Image 1 (cartoon, rainbow, N blue to C red):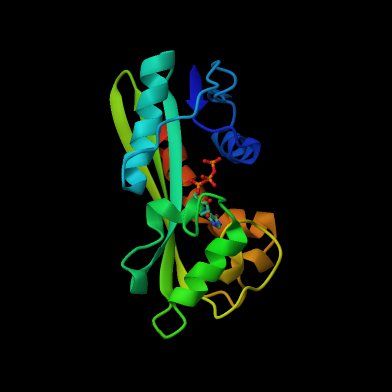
Image 2 (image 1 turned 180 degrees about the vertical axis):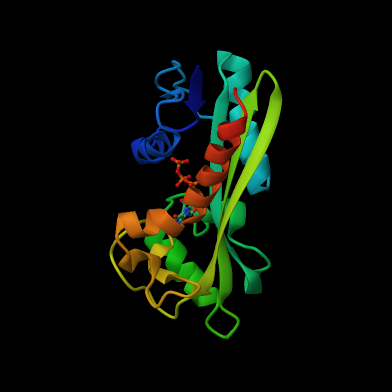
Length: 193
Ligand code: ITT
């Protein structure tokens, strides 16, 4: 059975492939011949995740799982959320995004936040949604060089380091993305495509 992961990011493909095992033939957008940009025009993380999976299923006639993720900061009413990738502008700079968030939180002691991943599976049988959350706090300044995005300013609950100070393996054990993938994997333990 073939399952398409709606990404061109080789790391995401490998992370999911490693956890799903060889139950499915997991393929990428390139493998189904999809070279166009997938639509991401809703204003929520679950909305964009569903939109991407549905687009691939309808246009390429293959079961598809799509992810969408973002950082949600409580004191900012859930921002940057669905806008995480380009919060400081269309240049999509991780450094600029971090500086914008730190500026907005300068005068607040309420630093709680979460990373959220929503995976949506669309098949001929309908759709299923799997969510992973990682709670933590926004640091006063960036720490660490690993990872990407907002990792240098995010300190997971119960850990004394930023996500960017963890190795990729350590992050993959606790991350929002890993938690959503675990739910997808356990769904496939009792369900098929
Ligand atoms: P693809 O669409 O190419 O997969 P993307 O960067 O848009 O890449 P996501 O939907 O996973 O990917 O995430 C959107 C943004 O949310 C991302 O650009 C980061 O700014 C932030 N983000 C998501 N997951 C993150 C993580 O694990 N660590 C740090 N920042 C993250």
